[in-house]
Picture 1: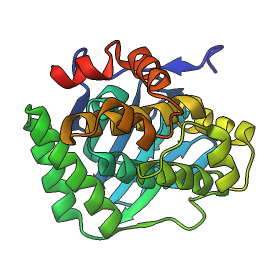
Picture 2: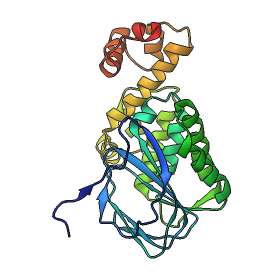
Picture 3: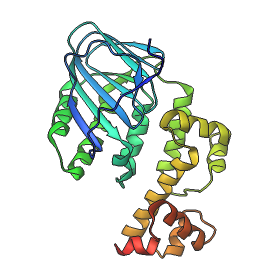
Length: 266
């Protein structure tokens, strides 16, 4: 056993989304994690086991596995695998203004293992993403793929836990956008939990604090309102629950390095 946990990085520098064929020579890997991206694996062939954070899953193709950042996993395959591996970096989602895309990924991340019922359409989406380089098209294909996976797949029994349910409920509240509030305590109260527990769930799931996750949604919604509505900066601040416009301006600049007015003019 290695004295330190391996951290692997199979991404390409400068690429926020990468899809490639699952290597056929992969059989057994040491426990490792990927700090900088989510890994989505689709297997249409192969037998053995896949362990994610001490939970061992039988590989029963066609099957989808989702490994979140910071999760430890390893493979024990006994036959030649076939399928695709998707590497999805946080930066890809950060540049997207599509809240539904993030919501779909949140729903999917609650299920580490999904049995696929309609593999033909799933494979087609993976094949298209493997060759597509246009970011806008990639975003559309990814959204369609995630929605299709959720539509034609069944989670293994007991593959979901209460923590995942609570985390997804938090993300669902944030994805509604309407009535966003810059207060982790407010959302903890809505979910009948504590800010400390909500923060721990976010750290476990995404390696970010609850306030950092909340800020992503606030900034994304602020950008939408600034770009696609005629609301003044003060009105946008009010819609996002800020007490005054000056506080909102400082908050926006902290995360974007631009004032709302400058961003709107770009």
